[in-house]
Length: 480
Image (cartoon, rainbow, N blue to C red; front, side, top):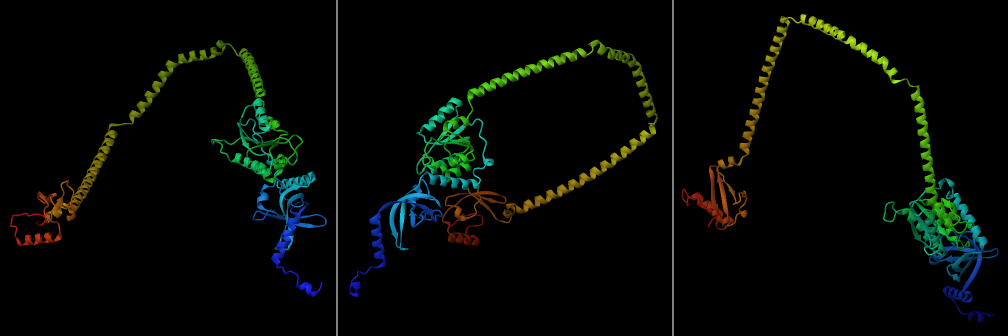
């Protein structure tokens, strides 16, 4: 091409060219299905989106799953998993590359699922979730059984029917989807919520949990292979029975549960014993116990009879004690007289040592001690009385010093209202109020008149000093 022709080529900006390429790729391919192996997947980004690549032996394709699509996926991407994805082919201008935005992701056949299942089983087993040492014993006869299953399927009816036949128990059903995108999260949440119920609450915590589902393909049962379900079953503090699928179906929850049942009906049989068999066993044990008791009583009766025959007759047993008793009765009067004589001799010997002079000396000493104690008691009483009198005198003087009557004696007066309450300011007195004025020698009634302002009060004081009211006039408290 000549230089003139090159100069006539349309000029593009980088953004315009990138947009044109994007439209070309999206218009030419649109939605495509691609098969490849997942590479470079390290888990979802903090934003919730997932970034990885699809590769085969000859090429590599960048891939992205947005957060909304990632949450709906039944099978999540894992490193090395061969998958078939459906999505929209587009470009990413920031790196001048093309990529596929995935809407659906599924394993590339049963072989890929089995490979993923085996790798997940090894991973969880390495964490100790399948150890036999951590499995719990099932209760012999649970009072309440919690069932995690679909409320509309045949599974719950089979379980209830089997429990009714064997040993009726209270059943709490936590309804969940047992297949689909949200199934795994619902089953794991049901197991956790059963464990969180209070023991004595309005909805009590069950003694046993059964996670049940009918048979199906590997894809149908895949929810029970998800890590969230396996970890919830392993963390359950309530004993858990897994009854997923038929006898030949094996899921990862079977390894984490405390007991695996081949079918949901078998789970009900494992959960409770047969009531009729228990009653028959109890009846048999009761009969055996009664027969053992009768045999034991009969054996002891025979032993007692044989022992009684070896014992001597009653007269033979009592003949010796009777003779000894008669001999003691004959010796008793002589023994009493001898004992009385011995005590009389002892008392005579003691009385000879008690002379009248010794008795009088001891009496005199007691008299002197009594007189001494009396003198000491009188002195102590006088001292106690004087101290009490002094304390009483001091208290009387202190009471007189604090009494308001001492103030009245110096020329002051105590003013009370009509109810007898002391008045401490002129603001508390209104015109016409009845007053009670107490002096040192008595009380006088008065009535408040006139204005209570300070100026009339001052005038009244001046008139009082000049003697304008006369020698015998009391006047009023306030000027008129």
